[in-house]
Amino acid sequence: MTFDIEGTALEVATTRPELLFGVVCVFVNPDDDRYKHLLGKKVKVPLYDFEAPLLADDKVAPEKGSGAVMCATFGDATDVEWVEQHSLPYKKVVLADGRVAADVPFIAGLSVRAARKEIVRLLKEKDLLIRSEKITHVVSVHERCGTEVEIIPSRQWYIDVLSKKEELLAAGDRIDWHPAHMKNRYVTWVENLKWDWCISRQRYFGIPIPVWYCQACGETVFPSVERLPVNPMETPFEGICDCGGREFAPDKAVFDTWATSSITPQLNLYRGREFGIDKGFLPMSMRTQAHEIIRTWAFYTIVKSLYHTGDIPWKETMICGFVLAKPGEKISKSKNNAQLSPQELIRTYSADGIRYWAANARLGTDTFFDIQEMQDSSRRLMTKLWNSSKFVLSHLTDFAPEYQPARLLPVDRWIIARTHEAIQDAAKWLNEYEIGLARKVVDDLFWKDLCDNYIEIVKERLYQPDIHGVEERRSGQHALYYCLLNVLKMYAVYIPHETEYIYLKGFKEFAGTVSIHLTQWPQPVEVDREILAFGETLKGAVAEVRKYKSENSLSMKTELECVRVVGEERFRRWFEETEADFRACTRAQKVVYDLSGATGDFG
Image 1 (cartoon, rainbow, N blue to C red):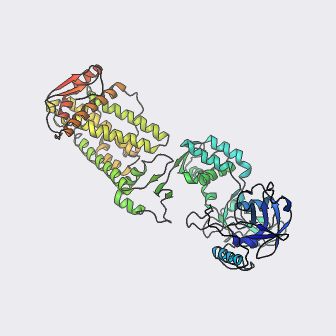
Image 2 (cartoon, one colour):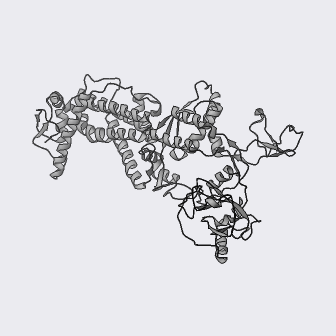
Image 3 (cartoon, rainbow, N blue to C red):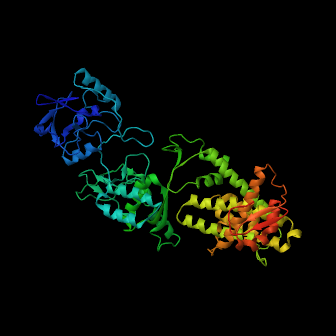
């Protein structure tokens, strides 16, 4: 559009023509030779014909548009900065209801978009519009409804954070972030803060701000600590203002959500004192939250903690990802983008099924929601766990956990060692808050080792002690009990209801503890790496037999005349002790060993 400066046309580009009445200045870059001779002069605003100064500011990009930018109150955040830095006046255009103020000529009472169209029409009509282009640019919008946000001056309450940047960065360094790279979001937010924290909101619901204003002098008055909490709109102020005033008006604002949720550590301490928990309560151990509120909930909790206690709120923080409906869009009730409601999902797939599926995500990483994937993985696991538990428990009817077999067969020692290894690996990942990686450890133990291999290898020994020996069966019972019980303990983190049911039905009488959720994982022990290596060799041999039968369209129950096992000499004794189980599992009439030292070749 065309502004006038001493009879010369000045081209100014804008995306907010409806704010022409609010223009308080036109800015150019101080190094732009086109405008140096005009600095300090007055420009006439089109349509409204009032004058505004032409000033210089480094923020103006000479190559963008015409290099001349109008500053209106308020088109964007840069206008706010300019008004403050250059002590410019404020001219009201847009009101809190989203319409143009009544004293603005041409467009009074119109919505912002309608006012924009009307101003463009008038500029064209008066031949003041040079050209109009469609562009794509970034604007601030409301998170839920997508409406553009307008900047409107109002009276608000603030907490000072700008002067605390160094303290806030130091506090972030004292907290262990999981995953570690999420700390960068906190640091970036603190380093780029431009405003103090506005803690007041003009909403219908919220915690009232306990403040009144003297009707005589406007001074702010506060209640005594003993009177808190108090709603100033329901309770009058008791006292006299320093000016002698006795009439007070309540503040009608409420606290920002984050201003109250940010004191959760202090609220927990307050509740803890009722139970005698006080010393050493703060800093708390850990906060878990999603990554998009690092800049709000995590940041503001750290702010309030520093102000209230002078210390960090928690020692560690676990940052989770979103479950996404589609790329870049989290599942949201307001967007109605979920395939099923949480209640429907629970009714259809169970709380355990949803919990197990959700636990598969990497920490801090978003996950796409797929009902079919949840159905396949969760239902399959829960069905397998139920069926394998029924099988194991059917072989523990005469089991006594206090009776230790005279010796354990090698394959039984292997599954116990694998259980120890899985417990330690899962604990390691859980201590790092990597719930998904810990779940994978348990899945591998349960599916690949316990179900796919161990149970199949020892099945006949459990069914036929008259052939394989009573003590040999007890060895298998001991290993099955130990392994499945600890699988249940590890899965209890993910599927609490089914594991509890199985435990109460079959393991409580052996373990004694009233609930699986009150049991403890075994203490770490040194894992026998030799027996683990033997187990992998044995698994490989079984896998090769299965592969051979599958490729030759043979039933897994088909008998084979001879199976050759290739491995290392150090495993000979263990293979010989396991031969009866191996032959029963593979249906091999004869087993020969090639233990010359080669590995990985089974036939």
